[in-house]
Length: 97
Image (cartoon, rainbow, N blue to C red; front, top):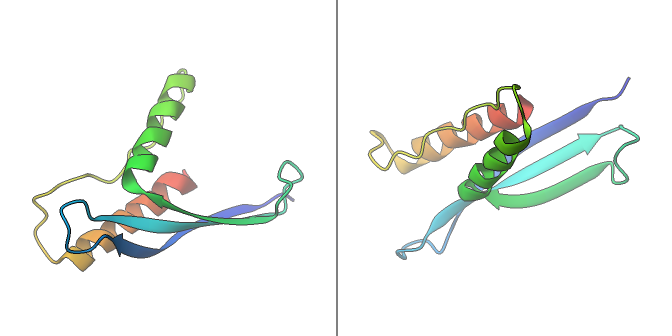
């Protein structure tokens, strides 16, 4: 049976303290599928790259619904760490769906 798992982990703030700081996430993929030449891969991606991916999926999805991404609220109530963790969980759910 073919199995593919994907994990969103290790959020890191880049350019911390500057006006152009952002968070990127480690995306880890493991599969035994014959469709993949590499059985594991790991990349770092930021939120806006997920937004790009979702738009591309919507263009090609036809009638298949594309999952939502977690919000991009600048008015989050709580700590920055809480926001980053909630977003990480939302990105994980997006990729799983």
